[in-house]
Length: 566
Ligand code: NAD
Image (cartoon, rainbow, N blue to C red; front, top):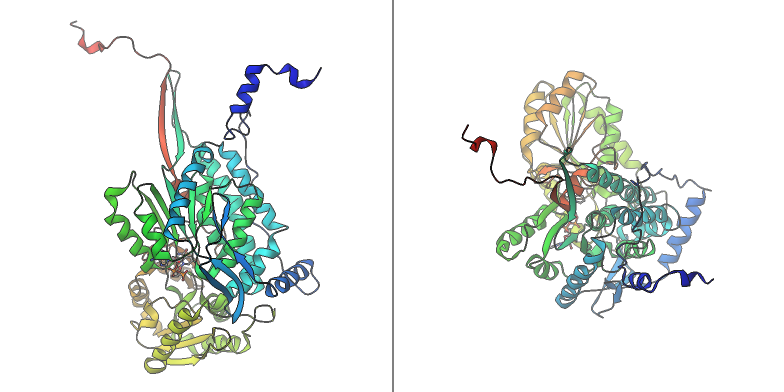
């Protein structure tokens, strides 16, 4: 007997109309996602297989020029209106031409997100999670060299900086978020014999707009995928200066089985794209990381458009920082100097968490300064494909000019202890710079520079308490900060005095390098909404819970006992 003949005609009819939205319909049992662990960092030592793989991919990407399309509803669109993606450390070298979306494409992306939502939002969450778990595994293996090489060449990261970002952190986001989603979905209200109460963690009603920065490929991958994991569909606008890695993230997600339309890649003029999306009735959320000024302007636009929306949009934004290190006189000078050198200059100071203002007691200053300068003298800067380099270039000309202007200011109004040199002919290179000022309100101690520039304020040893107060009120930001001290009382004093000055606070460690699952990341005040990327706190923003009460024996009389006469 042919197996098809045992299926009745009506069953066949059901089979043909059964929506793809239930790929595992009928699956019984509480499924658990694999327990996440942090992706080990590869060393790239001479002779290692990972070094050979990345060198090969760097070579290939350096010798090709690719074409990067818009992706809407799974369709690649080429508009012909293009811009270059270049190497910041060799800015005449074009890696790719990327196509810019017009407002009409943005409307198409909204339609694609709406169409995909009907199905994706109704998938069992475990099936959505499986897509990102598979993406993590692909990135850990066959895609690792590709995304790392794209990040190195397109964003000028050394191999180590790329590895901890575009490989390890993004893999961690994609493995830990499903586990956090599981924890969230597990949270259910009280019930009893007469009723069953349930929480239905619905995706938001509408689309999510993800806007990502240039400086972390992992953030670029996380901002669209975290809401998507929770059942939302997304329009993703990456940074113009990180288009190569954005393109490969999109390809990798497709390879992992992400259905068309769940994430739509729409690069182009940010203001033009935002004009369409932020005034649309179906805007349900914004997932942003970038500068405070841009986030503030988006928030204002959303406020002005409030009466247009079908629902209150969730607004999540992680923004700028002016991150500090404060040393107590009991600090270890070598640990402090290394933290300043690494925390201030790795990735050219272009981490939102980079140490950019340091407060050192006078009794330690000369010793610590000389140790830092000794390290700075050794630091090599240049093409990131030369693995001996500790620094690459800053991201683009705008950033190069901005940092150069700060150096000019320092030449006039402070003391440049080391560095201070900017050379932009071939690549946007800024030498690591240490500045000393005796004015605690000097603008280089207050404003975000986003370059390899650390400003030191030397305080009198007797003015520890006053210095903590100064640190707390010097800048509008509150992202990261660190205290170095061996005296436990000093650690406590700093931790309490600076409780609201940093969302990520470090004791005897540099203020950069947060790891998913270990130090949930985000800051308050001018540094963002502090929704801690890569944690349950973030995922909760992408659901709109529905309470469902089911009564097993509903009352059959409208009267209450108290209404009886006797
Ligand atoms: P940016 O603000 O220039 O750009 C961020 C994104 O916003 C980009 O995609 C950009 O195209 C877009 N954008 C620019 N103008 C816009 C507009 N008018 N409307 C809508 N979108 C617009 O920031 P950047 O230079 O890419 O990144 C550096 C900044 O990001 C720094 O301030 C840094 O501190 C911050 N950052 C913060 C965190 C964090 O977790 N707090 C992490 C990384 C970066």
